[in-house]
Image (cartoon, rainbow, N blue to C red; front, side, top):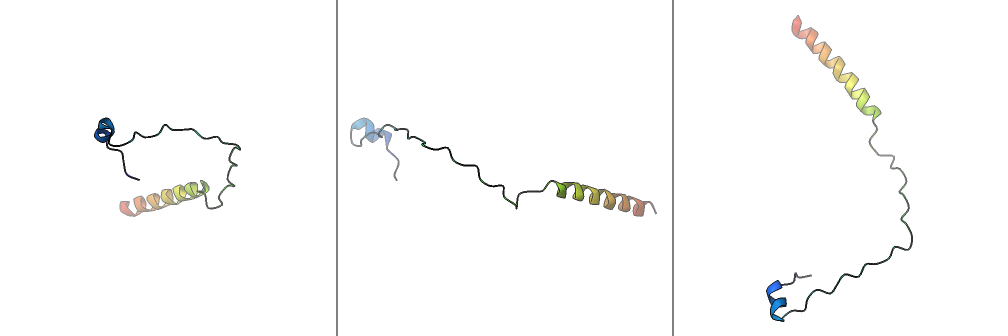
Amino acid sequence: MRSRDVNKVARGEQAPRPPHEPGEISQRPSHPDPDPRQYDHDDDRDRDQLMKKVCVSLCVLSVY
């Protein structure tokens, strides 16, 4: 769909855009089922614990 040229509308060469008519929603949409692939926050804790162990081991290695 092409955009309306304001200058052409002002000169009467192009019809103005029709007014918006809001529609009705007859029924509220249902909530989607939870996605099993959603992000699991337990993975954050596991990753944080692993990173702490790696950092500690690297610190110990760098001291010796």
